[in-house]
Length: 315
Image 1 (tube, rainbow, N blue to C red):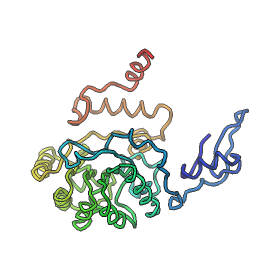
Image 2 (spheres, one colour):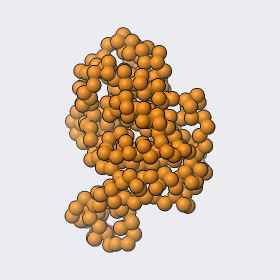
Image 3 (spheres, helix red, strand yellow):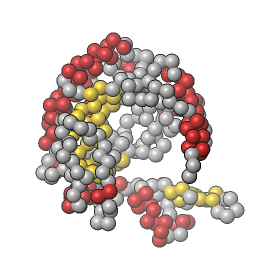
Image 4 (cartoon, one colour):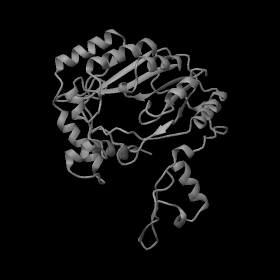
């Protein structure tokens, strides 16, 4: 059975209604005949109520995203994930959000704050926002203003072109301890090649990253390998930002994630059951003699090899 729509609303319907009454429900009957009810399911993100954490074992959750020794967040005790929005309005070629998190929609601010307050009452003092992209939406600044009043640190993934000096300073007041953003390319041509739809110049990007670092302990800029970028200029870009305390990745080879425009462009088809194996094998073959990023395994195994290793291990 496949359910379409916001799972927070559709799954409870499955527990109380016949599947023929649930919009967007798809299933095969005992004879193998396929059925689908009209509609896409409930998609009103603003109507998703606050989650109830009263019985949630927050004490077991010690993993903290984006928290590293020395980044100003060593005091943190318990972490939790919160979702402020779903989807992304951009269409970057490397992103596989197209088939399942395409449309951007935002939750009610009051529901999000109620969740955060309940988590704080349980001892949580660090929130990681699991949004596809944090910083889009009409209520982000209001959320940050409220977070500034609360004893909680935050981190997330975002785009630098969603922020300016004023909003970056607001992030600092909202106790942001980690700010990760995809730059992808150091040239406008490279960013256009990946359909980033970024209207900032590279110089402006650098200025904002440096300003962010003045207010946020950990600022991270991610790069992707592209034919539009000169390696010497990339090194200069990295050196300038690292001198100002901004961590910049080595350019990571682009992976054609199944579901992304890059996958369709590379293989000329939509994903099938062999999509991940096909994409991974292509990736390894393409960059085996060119080297991988400084944060990647330099001798990665194929998915087939990894699956054999997993299957051969004793239970």
